[in-house]
Length: 66
Image 1 (cartoon, rainbow, N blue to C red):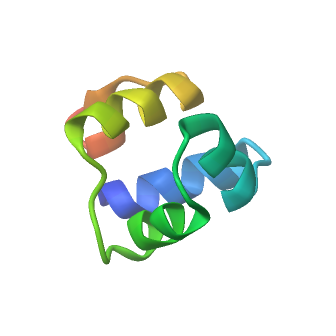
Image 2 (image 1 turned 30 degrees about the vertical axis):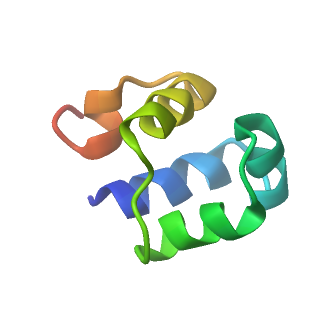
């Protein structure tokens, strides 16, 4: 599973909307949409914040660890 797919899957499993995630991470909804569509990748700093939000490791988020 790609990072893009994992980010979307975790958001859906958490019952959050893109708007919810954007507020919690302090980014625009368009950023969340671009990450989930693969048009852009979140920075390393954002990856850590996303991982913390979903209570997973960055390795799990980027697919190095299941």
